[in-house]
Structures are given as structure tokens and as C-alpha cells.
Image 1 (cartoon, helix red, strand yellow):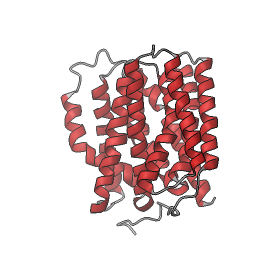
Image 2: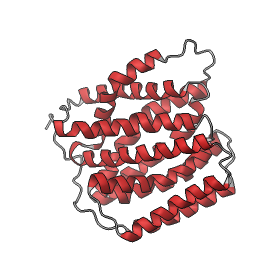
Image 3: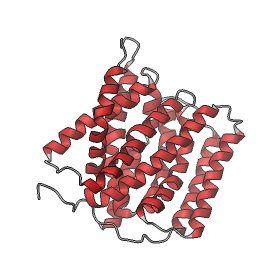
Amino acid sequence: MNKTMNGWASGLLGIIIFSGSLPATRVAVQGFDPVFLTVARAAIAGILAILLLTAFRERRPERRDIAGLFIVASGVVVGFPLLTALALEHVTSAHSIVFIGLLPLATAIFGVARGGERPRPAFWLFSVMGSALVVGYATSQGMAASPRGDLLMLGAIVVCGLGYAEGASLSRRMGGWQVISWALVLSLPVMLPLALLTLPAHFEHVNAPAWVGLGYVSVFSMLVGFVFWYRGLALGGTATVGQLQLLQPFFGFALAAVLLHEPVTAGMMAVTAAIILCVAGAKLSAGRKTAQAKDPTARRSSTS
């Protein structure tokens, strides 16, 4: 399997894992405070990251990588989990999944800004059309679901796109699992004390599904999914492999319907399908990257 196909396969596996994040978060916030959920998932994943880095005897990041790792941590370790957890107090996971249709646009924009990719003008036309569909969908609902929930989801998409693009750039020289692991470790001195400070006084009200949700977002959404996702972006390109995010709403809808018994309306499905068509057009219109990505598996390592 060539490098590009490896990137697509790895990216697809990451998206499948991420598809369970919003339904799992929706379940978890029924038993845990959103702030505690955010810091606890990061703290748990950070401890696992330390074990991984120690086991593989990874060297510390170079000084030039520290700022980028803080951007990754701010976007995907803190920003996206916190904003989505707060949003899911006001909207259903099925409603929030529609906003995931904006992630390819956000990721592509930051890919240009941070990774030097240069899509053609038609790419932006299709991307803006997809964004307009999302905004139009929210407006057509009269923002009845919750204006606050929708705004929180939009904010989550922006910070997540930045974290994805920055992580992809770093992964080309550090490796995918190393990037997310070091970002989690950098966050741990803040996340672990906050998790202890916000620890619920009692857990009698926390049911089994909430615990399962916490476990999923801590291990899979916060760590395992990024191992595959950042590797996929680094190998196949941020803008191109980033289009796989358009499959996430379909996987998420299925999980929300099957596991949470949430209604998935024809309107939700229609707008998501239309967004996918727009971003597919954007993908076909994307230009080549300015530089070929290196295989992140062939990175510097203290064990080599």
C-alpha cells in the first residue's frame, strides 16, 4: 500500500473513532459536569500518554515544536472537548453532528495558514457553499434548538480545525502519536489539578452509561483516534484527507439513533448530504500541496 493510500486508510480509521465522540459526550454530560468531563478526559489521556512515551523512550520535543504543541493542546485537548460538552447541554448529539460538516473547511483554512497548502479558487467556492448550508440549516430551525448551543459548536469547529492543521504539520516530522501524546503531557500540569478540584463530591448519580462515555472520550477520542488521524493527515495532506471528516456525520447519526435513540430527521440527513457534495467538489478542485509530506513513521527517535 503506497503512502497516499496509507494516509487515507489511517485517516478513515481515525474518523470512525471520532464519530463516537459526540454521542459519548452526550451520554457523559448526563452524569458529569461539562468542565469536569473536559479536564478529566484530558488528565486520563495525559497519564496514558506519559506511559506510552516512557515505554517507547521518546525524546523530548525540540524547542521549535513547543509552540505548535501548545496550539494543538489548546485546540483539541481543551477547546473542542470543552465547547462541545457545553454545547451538548443545550442540543442533541444528532443536531451537533451537522456542524461537523464545517470541519473540512476550518481544517483547510488553517492548513493554508499553517501548512503552506494552496487549494485552487474553486475549492473555496465549494467550501463556502457547504458552510452556507450549515448556517442556513441552523437558521431554518429558527435557532430553536439553542442559539447558545449552535454558537458553542461553531467555536468548537474553529479551534478543532486549528488543532488538526497544526498537528498535521508537526506530525510530518514528529509522528502522529507523538504529537498528541506530547500535547496531552503539556496539558497535564493544568488538567490534572483541575480534574481533582472539580471532582464530584458523590458519584451515586452517575450511571453506567456516563462512565462508559467518560472512558470512551478519554481513551479513544482523546488519544487513540488522534494516533491514526494525525498520521493520515501527515501522509495524505491536510486538505485532502481532511475531507474524510464529511463521513463523520453519517457515522455519528447512526450511533446517535442506535445508541441514544435520538431522532434523526430527514432535514438533518439532507443538509449533511448536500454539504458532502460541496466538500467533494472542493476536494476535486484542491491543488497540490507545496511540499510532499514525509512519512511520519520515519521520524527521529531515541530508539533508532
